[in-house]
Image (cartoon, rainbow, N blue to C red):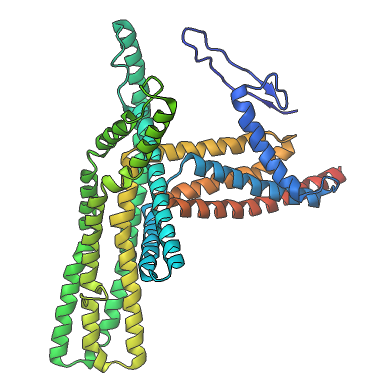
Length: 487
């Protein structure tokens, strides 16, 4: 029989704290009501998922191993679901894809005006997509409000409005002690995430710079085929490229990342202002009017503020940075339309002296370099900007708390094992993979992967490690069986 030890507190003011020392598995009379239901739900989902695939009548170590594997898969699914529900974030990249798709549908509606069915269907898809975007943006707003609220708990001064002087002084001193610790923890986590994100930006530019040096060496190899005037023109273009590349140097990138932080200096204040306007727009129970009138008023308040976060705050600044970055890339690589680009101008100089395969290879290399440079610049101007915005509002610590919560559920599931060997088995096949999977998700998110990508890759990492853990578990089980036989 398994036992659990939990420290609990009676939070009623003026009463003495108590410690709930233990409770038995399956003993409802001693299980705290707050923990009983979540534990039971997690156990039931995991167990039922496994039981669907495993017939209870079948016994043996091989079947047990199969059931353990399915149990692990179920656990990963449950934990990933909890992580997604507790911390919903939709990246700007994901939302922009839906916007682009909606624009295509709208264009198709205009194009097929003669066909009422096609036109109306495409228009409906476009309208539905915009409504979906509003929901995603509003979800981001609610998530940001959660982050700001937790940041205030960790760092904000409290109890200023307590009227009793003695009580206020006591509460503020306690609050000061808590903030002294929590503010450092909060800032440290935020700085770690920010540091990883900045390194990711620099690493992408470093990779592109290496590719561009390779491209420059390829171009230099064709110099001997040129006339003196063509060599002079080529040298001039190469100097212009070096000058344009300075935009992407470490010093200039750092300066732009610092400028982004300055752009967001009033972000938290402005967001709280927007949030308060939204909150005050609701009509509560004591407000005049019938319940039906207040219900419709509150629904309209939500609808009217669906996009206030993504559309009204910081987007103009982000769009400006993105446009400046794209222009800097166009100077070197061209935009495929009006701007030819320095490397393409060099290709024009070299083309008369190149074989068909040499020209095709050079065009392909320039194209790949163009894609890499644009991707690196997007990391800086868009993806880091979005990450920095979340960090300024306090997103990193709440991400960590969400992860710890899901790991806590994993610990509960492992703790429900019947004996020491079963607990060890679950720890190897589920506990460590869950820790590694969630850790991978956090790391990838800090490295400017989207939240969905981080969750998917983290899940794959956890699944891979669970298979490895299953192999290790089988080896341990066989070794123990041999010990028993030999004894």
